[in-house]
Amino acid sequence: STKLSYTPPTGKEENRTGAGGGPQRQRPLPVIGGNVPLRGTFPPITEAGPCADAPYRAGMYGMVNQALEALVREKFGDGVWESIKERAAVNEVAFVTMHEYPDEVTYGLAGALSEETGIAVPDLLRAFGVYWVSFADRGPWGKLMRESGKCTYELLAALDAMHARIAMSFPALKPPSFRVHADPDPKHAGCKLLEYRSHRPGLAPFVVGLLEGMGSMFGERVDVEQVAARGESGAECDVFRVRAVSVKGVVSA
Image 1 (spheres, rainbow, N blue to C red):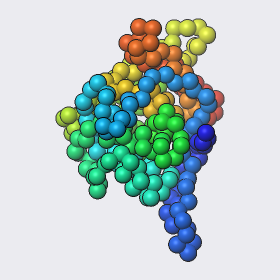
Image 2 (image 1 turned 120 degrees about the vertical axis):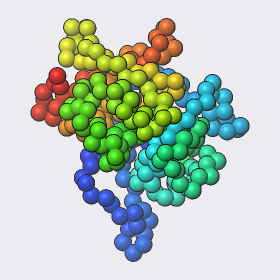
Image 3 (image 1 turned 90 degrees about the vertical axis):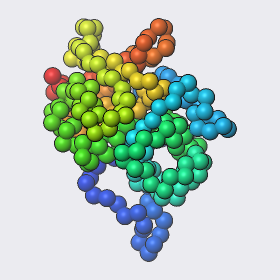
């Protein structure tokens, strides 16, 4: 299996073409930290089309697919992006930020990237979660993110309110819900429990990456453990135990 590594951002972009017009250099994917057992099922990719058997029909705004395209082009090269579009039967020349695309498009691209690279879908989703935070931080929502919290725990607690504000610009937005409360277990003092609810299946790895990406944004190390998976043992949602520690060793309040 392919091992993904995390390279902290330097603020400098590498050239896509090497000296003398040589091949593009692939940069390491952002993440993967420790071994985080993840549960949940990625929607099926069938001959009838990406996620054709998934029991829902929803849409994602174009900025999600724009972020996925940016990740693939940056880490794997333009050729891989064109190849996975062909695999997933995606004919879009460019994704439009404010346009709503079927979820099947995004899931299909993720499945195609896994087939193209040999990297497991959960690892790719986790890497995408980390990348999504930096992508959003560089964009028009970066200021709102930083105004919503000064550390991982604060931003987590503010995510639902932040999504409500974003929905004013994206009226068809169907965001997930993030509920945060203190872990009552004395053995995990200082940790938070995150309840994640979404109508979209299989995104627990993305949430882990999202948490790790928040930690990177705030200069914190974030350890994540999935303690419940939606649909398992009667659980109604995914639940994660989160511990955020600053690089100086101070646990976030």
